[in-house]
Length: 128
Picture 1: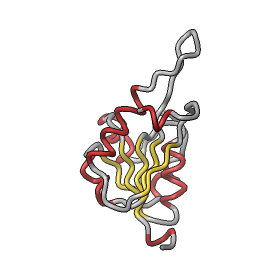
Picture 2: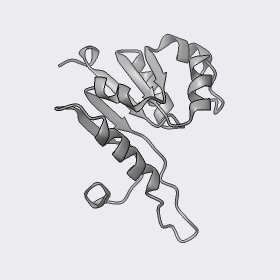
Picture 3: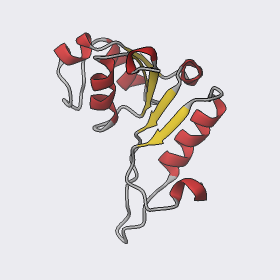
């Protein structure tokens, strides 16, 4: 299956996920999912409050911005790009990765591929 035949979902539209969604959206259909409804509303209007991508880049990409997790089911390639903040002892907070994994897992179609684009230590995906 070529890239143009795929439907990609990017989960987490922060400083990593949003530019990634825009880049893929130049070549194929993308679902951009985030739990922050205010962010989704702004992105639908062509405004990125983080200034990671320009309004022109947003409008030129084929992205459906949503906070509805059921749209993940329509995708065959899912990229999880959520933060993994660390505390003062450099211990990562995996709760965003765990939460995103549960959301994706509940809305995963058979045969879909899931990729984690997050800074985590080796073995995290097996642990969670």
